Each structure stands twice: as structure tokens, then as C-alpha cells.
Length: 343
Image 1: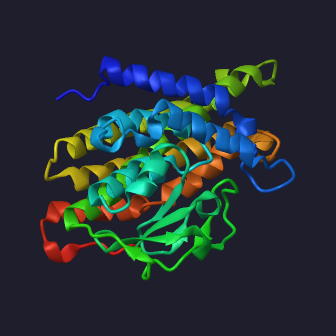
Image 2: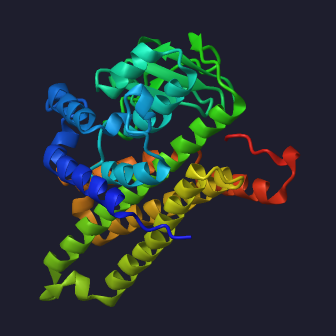
């Protein structure tokens, strides 16, 4: 069993990386935040370019106008979205909603607009009613918890809510009463949940890589006592520990993707383990980045907070690390009565 990327997967990842690096630098992320510098048109242009490349329909079958790619193909692309802190719901729209709509066959018009980049779908399936990106979406995909019924509601049904991540456009909606219930079997509902969890884990890996890169660059330039602070053993050890946590998490994310693609009976357990490891690693990386940067890390003018805040929000989305570990434990127990409710 080999979890390394194929040449085709690496080529597609590199193409998406080139696009996002060019079109979504930190100032583009800032343009999505509320305030004087908000520029919705710039953010919309990034979405249009992703649609033109086929990313928004990557998980949609070819017969429905997509690329028909699997989780192993999508995970590297979602990691790239994390690297730039893409201020748009790529996981929710392309990896959760699009294949779910294709499976129902009842929302062809919405699916076509989604693939074309003309519609954005925000998703909340944990039953909390808190919907990230509701402020930039046209449609909400809502559920009352893993395995529960799923339905569509207009984005106007969500009330704005303040969050630590200003780019997310957080909203609150009634997850118990979606306007249009979707006719899905339990396997499709579980698949939607697992894809959302896996997508969040992949983005956390990407966010962590950028935070480590920023920290590595900073400790080489920042000098104390006449030498770069990166030469201090304490700083080296902190960064090495953070990198080690990340390098343990990243292969688990690919392993979980492989499990989903091959329909393994342990797929949900593997996805939960991947999210737990990715959440823990990302929070460790973010804490280390803040510490090695010192006071400058706490200023809004410095780019670090764009990625750290997204880590804090994403680590708790789709079930935090503690909840995911409990889910793994319940799966290993093989006891149907040990299902884990969301906190």
C-alpha cells in the first residue's frame, strides 16, 4: 500500500498551487475580511479561476460535467487551498455538496451552476446550526449531525454571527428544518460527513505548512545577541517538534483518502484519526509559530494571524480532535451503543 501521489495527481496539485499562489496572496485573503479593505470582486475572481480549471467539479462524475476524481486526487488540492488560507468554502462546495447533489440527481441546475463557479454552497452537518461561509454562499446544506437527514436552505435563512476568523462569513441557521430535504440513503449521508472531515484535515495540513514556512523564514532573519534566533537550540527544538507532528499527520490524511476511494469498512475510523492528528498538529504548529515570532505575531498587519486564526477555526470544525479520538475509540470497541454525540 503506497500513499504517495501519482505523477498525474502531483501535476494537478502543482497547477492548483501555481494558480492559488498567484491569485490568492495574503492581501487577497485580507480582501475577504469585513472592513475598509473588503473586495468581493477580487475573491470572486479566484473562485471563477478555480471553476475554469475544473477544481469545483473535480469530485463530480464525468457524466454530470465534472472530472470524476476521487478523494486521493482532491486531498492535495485542498491542502493547497489551506496553504493560502483560501477565504472560500472549497471543501464544502466541491468536496461535500457537489458529489452529494450529483448522487441525488434532483438538483441538476444547482449542480451545473456550482461546477461552473456560479454558485457557492456553505455546509453545516454537525447539528450546531453554525454555518461557515454562509455570508458568501447562495445555498446552505444543513444536517442535524452525522448520519442525520440533509437538506438545502437559502443562504438568506442564516443570521450573521461574529467569529474569530473574519473571512469565514459565519452564520446561524436551523439545521433541524432545511427547506428542501434531499433523498439520500445512509451511505451517502455518511460519505458526505466523511468527505467534510477529510477535507478539513487536508486544509489543516496546508495551513500548517505555511505557518512553518513563515516561522522558518523569520527565525533565519530575526537576530538576537548578534546571531539569528534560529540558531538557538530551544527554537530549533520547538520547530522540529511541530514539524514532526505535521509529518505524522499528513500521511494519515492520504491514508484516509485511500480508504474512502476503495470503500474500506474502516474508512470512517481512518478519517476520524486523520482529523484528530491534523487538528492536533496544526494547533501545535500555530502555537509554535506565535512563540518564535514573539510580539510581531500578535499584530494584524503581519500575515501570520490569517493562517493561525483559520487553524483555530478549522481545528474545531467537523468535530475537534477530542471528539474524533472518541469516535476512533468507539469504532475500535465495535459496540454500536458507543456512538459518540457531538459536543
